[in-house]
Length: 401
Image (cartoon, rainbow, N blue to C red; front, side, top):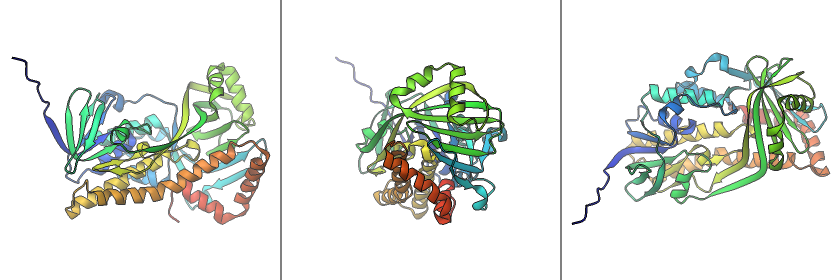
């Protein structure tokens, strides 16, 4: 007589979140107090989440994001010495010294926005999640199958465990496997460019100023960090990335200082360089049957306007508020009407920024003469037409008008 196959017991939750990045964990943290039983599934171990590796990325936060992080108890876990503040931003086109200048004093705020290392943010988000006991963490596991019916969403893990919940939420990156399992399409735009990030010391102070230099072929962003340090972001054609990654430190130091016009004096590399391909993603829909997308799984941005993290956090809080309203009203948390409302709200917030960013990237990476002229005109117009500049600043800071 053959052996009977043992059927794995199904664990039931109210909400299952796939992905324990900042969006997924912030979403779980926002649900605290709702009475919902939440599970978070993550490939990495708890130890890796508690002490994430440095990935070279520094995140410019909007004022809305700062307020949300304070409300969720995340901000309190970030050491003050790790936080810098951008008070001025300058956009430079080509080799000219002329700049479109954004000044925090025109907004009435003390700064345009904070800037913090991605590893510092991830560590703080996990600490806030853990401190609030915001959910059951199922770490070291991957989702190998997912689906849903009218009653429940279901996932199968690579260790054989099966989970089900009233709502499944994907927060597992712009290349979300969960999104694929659930049959939601996404439009991807490969820019054919790479982003190399590193930190550098420099001789002169940065005066809390962020620079975006649209040089021909390459874009150079220099973002202020605490002390006389800056985060340097080089965007360049993908076939040139290996050359920059292989440059000796001395040669790289001289090259970056020269490309930046020696504004900060001599510059010295700190730590490692990190190389990332640039691919933007926008899901066709942010929801399915008992399923929703948040973070980069919904919208993965080009980094030039620094809105990726901020939109991800906004998606998490938007969906969480919709779910909490459903709980309060006695409605089902996976009901299609509520998920449609989330889709519409986040689409209104994200689509103009996504399309505007892609248009900006196209204009400022086009080296043809008409595009160069258009860039010059736009920069001068931005300084002259104050309402236009103020509107851009409101979008950069995500501060209400």
